[in-house]
Length: 161
Image 1 (cartoon, rainbow, N blue to C red):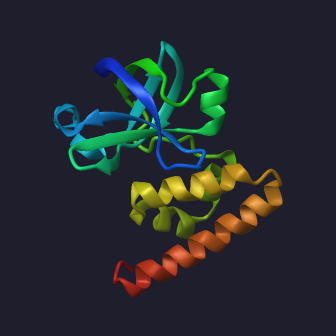
Image 2: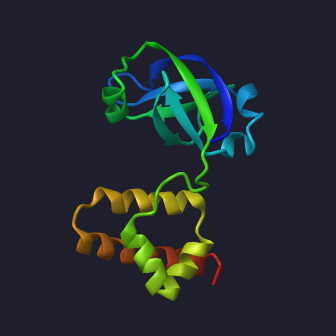
């Protein structure tokens, strides 16, 4: 992975009374990334826990990377803690692993493959995360097909075929 930036930062709470935490960097730093604020990154905190994430707006002049409750726990992090950060360019341009169920659907169904090809990376990440949350494979397939049917309808209504 290509190192984009290393520094120290603080683990901040995104919102009071919410489990979301963030690590923030300035827009000046982000401006040097290959795709600027659209660059998908891997965040390493204190030399541990490669976290795939995007760069979200936080406040004027600041971008943030979300750190989930699970990552906070597994890395032993606390809100307000000063940490060493390393930010790498994510070698996976989508920024998330595609579940096996979706790979199978893409291989077997040309319509699903066409819809997938026209989707934005953000929509692709949405269906990947949704499928991963479901443990039952049959339910994953059912929900994925529903998602692709709805996505195909959206694309038709926007004139994308």
